Image (tube, rainbow, N blue to C red):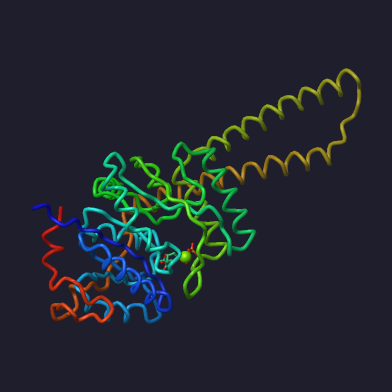
Length: 342
Ligand code: UDP
Ligand code: MG
């Protein structure tokens, strides 16, 4: 008999006590509707300071639930990586804990991958950014246009991290050992045939976004540095153009002074040239510094995250069928999950 496929849902959570109950109820409903598949829900508590972890302790009564809790906030990228490493599924879905990634898509995504074995990923892409501040949407569009021009890796505008992947693709992603992780780029870099599901932006069920404008700006810079070296080339080219201009100006001024006897107004010219060249130098050094800083972080080989607690480190009694009021048809023990480890 063909074994039931295990689908791992990886859900990064940072201060999501308000939205998490809605997400949990909804994914329990999705799992109940897909009876021919096994599910594991992997919640990654990214150092939340609200009641998120307490909720996970509660959900642990459901044998489908596994969780990791970090020693502090390490960021969404770290949480997604930890969840992917912890997952055992034949298929893996990454989704946010705020209902902006509609859980109702999971069945459609999985079915598509089962029926189209030449595809390894079904990913969601927002066609609108309704509900988002205009400036944020505009900057996001500009960022995607820019990064796609300067990077060989395609990073789709509007692409969410919400996607269902085969084990093959998950293992490929996990084989990338970089410290500075920019998932949207990594998903594109590993390749694999991807089917895009388009949908209109959905607003958060509750709580607030964790991304301020400044955080997004820094994140986009991380993306550019991680997936393109064009800024370094630009710095070199601008340097060359400055040298060329300096030679041309030197010739012009020499000719004007020697042949035409035209005195050059020295002070203003000098100030302008010094400011221009100084600015270009500092700008170029800044770009170089950014790459150097990232390299420094990479060579330190620090762990991307530290785990403080998992469902295994707590002394729980084994969850029994019916323990969880939200998900009464859960498996009666954890063995099904263990057996499915590829
Ligand atoms: N998140 C996280 N760590 C962080 C920030 C966010 O794990 O430091 C999680 C958050 O709980 C949510 C997902 O990442 O599940 C997306 O975050 P958010 O909704 O704030 O981002 P947005 O949808 O506004 O881009
Ligand atoms: Mg969100």
